Amino acid sequence: MKSSCHQIPEAVHGRGIVAGRLAFHKPPEQGDHFRLTRSQIREDRIQGIYPRRAIIARFMPVLDIHEIQRILPHRYPFLLVDRIVEMEGERIVAIKNVTFNEPFFGGHFPGFPVMPGVLIIEAMAQAAGVLVLKNIADRDRKLVLLVAIENARFRKPVMPGDTLRLEMAVIKRRTNVAKMAGRATVDGQLVAEAEVMCKLADKDEDPVPQAVSS
Image 1 (cartoon, rainbow, N blue to C red):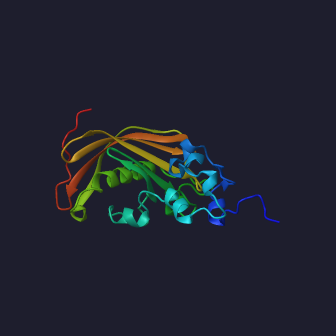
Image 2: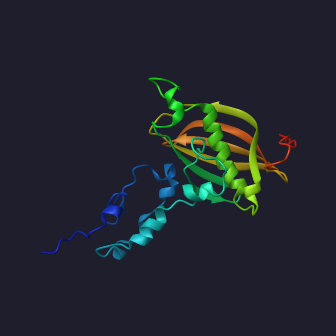
Image 3: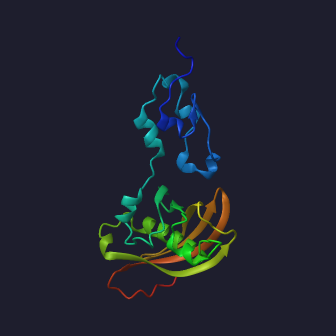
């Protein structure tokens, strides 16, 4: 006897899609990169096997780690952005998966691993760097330098297993200097915030920034 339940591929089922419905592990606002609604997957289109390509496309990041490495010069152990999930105009959202194997946890702190706040700011700055460099043709000859930090606040500790969501938005921009506001959240909870100033410089240029009025 034919089952009344539609068969759904394991790859789809593992994402929380059950019988044409979506069971989010987090509320959508906490995982906008998993933005998928029932209206986008109509039940009458799930006929035995929903097209895997369509499902996978919805979960693909805007930029994966390989594409990020083509934009940023940072490498392990100091590349602190794993993927970009949103990017438009003057705004970017990046993800950093914090694992127990991070080299800084060995000494910060033994028995109570906490991600250093300065590295959360650095991760914000790297996300900002992707936004600045993404459309520059000769970016291989450029660097995005962090030249100022303002109004930094650290609300909660970031620990192994956390997924750090980094949201950066441009406040002011000059020819080669941008000031951005950043927020870092874990599971929708604010863990850090700051304003950072970044300068786009040639690799052989004096890194002294131009002033940006506050």
